[in-house]
Length: 248
Ligand code: GLP
Image (cartoon, rainbow, N blue to C red; front, top):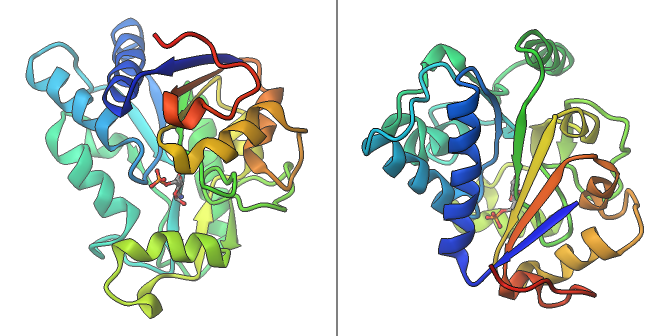
C-alpha cells in the first residue's frame, strides 16, 4: 500500500487528478471507477481544467460509478447520476455511451446488479477505482458488517450514513434509506485503487483502515489485501496514523 500525505485538500485533489490524467494519456481506453461525495469534487475540477486546457482527451474512457441511492430517479437533483453530470461529465468529453451507472428505479434489483457486474466484465474490468471513505469506514455504500465476498448488491444504509447524507437533502425524510453499490468483491477486482480522504473527520477511519485489523466491521480495512492501492490524504486525515510519512 502506498501512502501519500499532502499539505491540504487542494494538493490531494491535484495529485489524484494527475494520476488519472497520466493513466488516460498512457491508455486512452482507460476504464475508470468513480466515486461521489464531497471528497473527489476537487479532483474532478482538476480533471475538467486539464481537459479545457487541452492536456487530456477523455473521449475513449469508460466509467462505472460505485453506487447510487435506491430508490431514486436518475434525474433527481440528489441522485449520484446527476451529481456526476454536474461535477464532471457535463464538462469533459467522456462519451455518454461509455458512462455506466446503477439505476435507482429498477424493479428487479438482482437483475440490475448482475447487469452491472457483467458490464464491468465486458469492459475488461476496472483499471483504476477511485474511492472515498465514510466516517465509519465504509467504501462505496458497503457499510460495516458487509461480507467481503459480495458483488454489486442492495444495502440498507446505516443511521450515521443517512445523517451524513442528509446535508444534501431538504428534509430528513427525503434521504433514501437504501442504495445499490458495487460490493467489496467488485472493488477488490479493480486493478488499481485510489483512496482519497481529507480532513480531521476522516482521521479515525483512515487509521483503522490502514493500521487496524482487516475486518468486515471496517470495510476499508480490506484494502490492505489489495496489491495496488494508493492512499492520498491530507495532513489532517493522516494525523492519527501510527507512522505519518513526510508531507509531499
Ligand atoms: C457516501 C458515498 C461514498 C463516499 C462517502 C464519503 O456514502 N457512497 O462513496 O466515499 O459518502 O463522502 P464524503 O466524500 O462526502 O465525505
